[in-house]
Image (cartoon, rainbow, N blue to C red):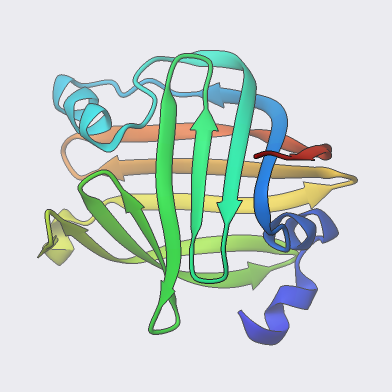
Length: 172
């Protein structure tokens, strides 16, 4: 992100400056996919498949070349690996590899989906999901909102909540 990183809300900068193995606590609300096919895609990706509201436990394993994010939702565990490739953020989520451009808008981190590969095959542009993924912060809380919907299928992943940065603890 270069100089734009300094314009992000302090909690967003603090979160993305964490290194090593860190555990965080917070609250989350998940959205349930509405169609059978959306639930199948959510199953394949490892995203939440039921509506829930409650605590979230987040595990970060950040090394110099990549990060593994493990999100312990109330009824589901979702793990993904993030790394940089040619200036874009790549998230490996199950069989899907998503490429994002990052932007700062009024202190908010906005992730814009640019590429998608499933089982190594590029997704056709007209089949690309609409992804809304943002992070902002207030005080010592990182607030996040993620929603992904596929054309003709509907929402396959949706969750929002916050992580309390004051709960950050090194893990083994």
